[in-house]
Amino acid sequence: MNFDLKSLALPDAAAEKCDLLVLLIAEDFRPGSDPLSSLVAHALKNKDLEAKPGKTLQLYQVPAVAARRVVLAGAGNGSAKAVRQAVQACAAALKGPAVKRAVLCFAAGAQPDAVASAVQAVADATYVYTTTKPQAEAGVLARVTLGVPDKAAAQVAFARGQALAAGVGLAREWANRPANHATPTLLADAAKALAKHARIQCKVMGPAEVAKLGMGAFMAVARGSEQPLRFIELRYSGAAKADAPVVLVGKGITFDTGGISIKPAAEMDEMKFDMGGAASVLGVFRALAELQPAINVVGLIPACENMPDGRAVKPGDVVTSMSGQTIEILNTDAEGRLVLCDALTYAARFKPAAMVDIATLTGACVIALGGVRSGLFASTDALAEALQQAGEAALDPCWRMPLDDDYAEGLKSHFADVANVAGRAGGAVTAAKFLQRFVGDTPWAHLDIAGTAWKSGAAKGGTGRPVGLLVQYLLEQAARPAPAAARKPRAVRSRAA
Image (cartoon, rainbow, N blue to C red):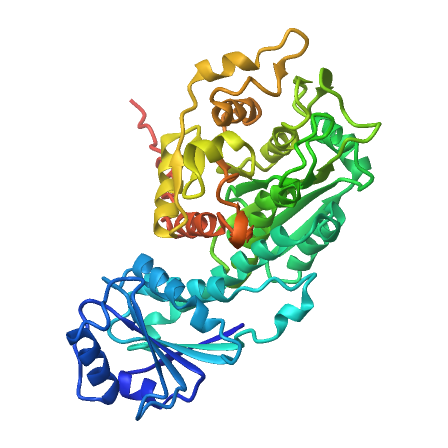
């Protein structure tokens, strides 16, 4: 979809030729003397419209308005969250089969965050999966003009909204692909395609390279699949070479049967979404390609399938991770932590400022937080606070969970340094405690997105989360002032006595 930005007052909006005009009406709306202002004022006065987010009034062939359809949408206080709700309420109208060009216009002032939110909300509301359903392309909205009072003031936020829309869209598309259209090799190809953008490089390693690195835990998970594993390394270089990067590690299980500890058949098809962490890393790099912030970022994706072949790892098997720690695999369906632990060990070679892993890791996190907030575990308060604030600002929230050492007691093993599961109680926390063993002293956070990476039921599909949270965090880190260079003390000559 193509977006453009225009300075539009209400009289200008009325003259825009389009299939649909959506007017965002905030609570502080003050009508002018033009026809659209009068229309909105009358609708509000007669209580046919409320300025609350989510309230709409649909009109057809309004006199003195060039658009065929008009939707008046309440936008509350005009915040990013209220504007997102307003656009979501207009989703059906935006996806109308005859709507090829739409204008979304702020009837009054437009806050920068609300401008970015409007672009993302339109892209989200009109997203249509097409990879294996090409006929779905018919009737897709092709162009959206965003009307604001001051184009120059909104330009930066508009560009940010476009970049995030592109990143979230890429993450959703790859998460939605069936597993036979999103194999580890195809996922690696998607990463390679990102390297066509400025400042992005991609390196892909196969079984031989991974074996040479000693990634025994990662290799154990991949053993049962005919699809060869891929270890994907993306680099975005936006700052000085000496600047420590942020490393993002995305779980890339492109299909998870559970292995020998096989899952129930019901809803197993949704295990194609088990590479949601990997998809989010791809989405972040797509957004970085557009935004070009002054920061260095490394993305690592251990990608493989978890299948129950005769060669597959068995419950009770012991494997040696890249760190040298041995792991007793009590449950082969706890495979995500096995591929992540080797990737986290590998990440240390970049001497990162921080590491964040993103994974659809535990059903326990879904029970704890549902589909509203991602689970956040962090080794430092500073990193936890930065990620939580970024999530709130991006409307992609998370919630900090504990990492008390007592939770690691259940991971003790008689036959290895650590077991890969610790029972049902506190399952999301014990999984995080397992990962924490492999991060050393580097500030580290783990985002469990098992409840937020996709939706089930009638709205089944990938959400693209937490691309918004991660991009916001990276932009905030890039905007931080560089620490002042340490000054060398001036040499003082001693005087002869």
